[in-house]
Length: 402
Image (cartoon, rainbow, N blue to C red):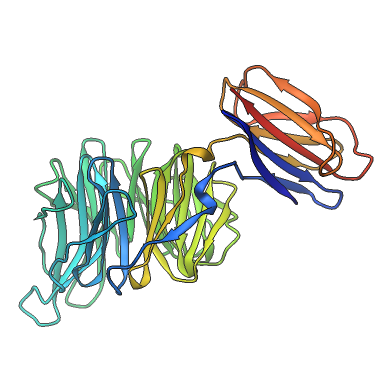
């Protein structure tokens, strides 16, 4: 498969995809000026793990990690270190309902030297933080908001060493109470969408509509799940060995082909794109949560991912901060081609916009009109090419016109 892209004129995007003689399908994902293939490393301010990152349009990015590391940035390019006590290990940070929530645990906070206590801090600006929940031998790991409440995961470790994940519930984000048991094991993340909370951890996916009563849902495969989000109208769960699962309702899940065996731990969405990040510097993106494209291979493990300032920012090992180029130019049309008795093209583009579909039987040859669509009625939109190519290959391009 050969794919090229270029901009024809203001507001007109071009994608070229090759339907070859020996290829069952071909797919074009590129768009002119799209920053998904252009990532830059920001100078590290710390040499420890950064575990997660969140974004707010007013206050910018907040990244957290081991040994109390907390960094802020307005644009993802210039960062300021705002250290907290080194006894704190931050696991997650989220921007939820107008506030940042940083979570994890603080070591040596209990009566025993090897004990720890929960960390659940809130901040309106990422600068001034207030502790909200401190319970011994408890780790807070993930938070979501929906149905008029906040729900976080609190992992309690009893005297026997057995871990139990509880749902930690708050109405105002200030007072938090344990409301139910999620699972008798570690759960790593939680998300809300379509009226339901979904928590993931290991080979388990748990669902609840009230944050108190949880039911287990069937999971395709047995790979350990690390993170879950709700984006583009569906849940996305990721984990070990490149696992990506999607679900419209949090109850029935479908395994997707990621094209990687890396551990995936971070999820973010923005600019019409969905991205996941993980070990070995892996970053994958998709416009539909089904078809995934590899974007980065930095070799340094990544953990957290956020979208903001028209870019994706990933953080990870040795204080790594990677930032993509601009995403706003990534919304041009896409073609998916399926080989059969006739070539079927699925055009993904802006509904209501004018599109022109053209083809050529040789690279650098003359483009010929296949179809002009005055107003795209739906996306994706099916197009059939009933003709054969005398060269055994055919290039197609989709142009969105002003």
